[in-house]
Image (tube, rainbow, N blue to C red):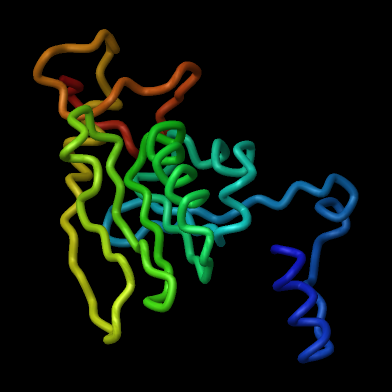
Length: 174
């Protein structure tokens, strides 16, 4: 929970977030991983994306990381989204409002022209854009026994220390 959001909830509604005693002592807040139609994804708000340790908790566990944003600092968040796609090694989706723009779907693709699957830069009207995520290809790539780069790889190499969560393994690995 961001401080700004916490302040608004408390000031506007007189409410506070319920936090377990253990979490309050350790200040470790774990984010849930959602599974919908066999796709594992996590959700963060834009300010949480700045914490690299918070993003890394999703590494190996998600196919996609969705980042909800209402942010005008497009340059900073462009860099963070690009970085998150590589260090989490998952499709990274930034959902900003149309006032500020730069909503996008980013892939950890090897070829630079394949990295932004969809990108929107503001506008006057609300609309929906659909993008196809190749979850099977991502999982197959991450499941390889040997992780040496090959010429025909679709994705950038996985980061050091990457451990694929068991339910995401694609067998047989390529």
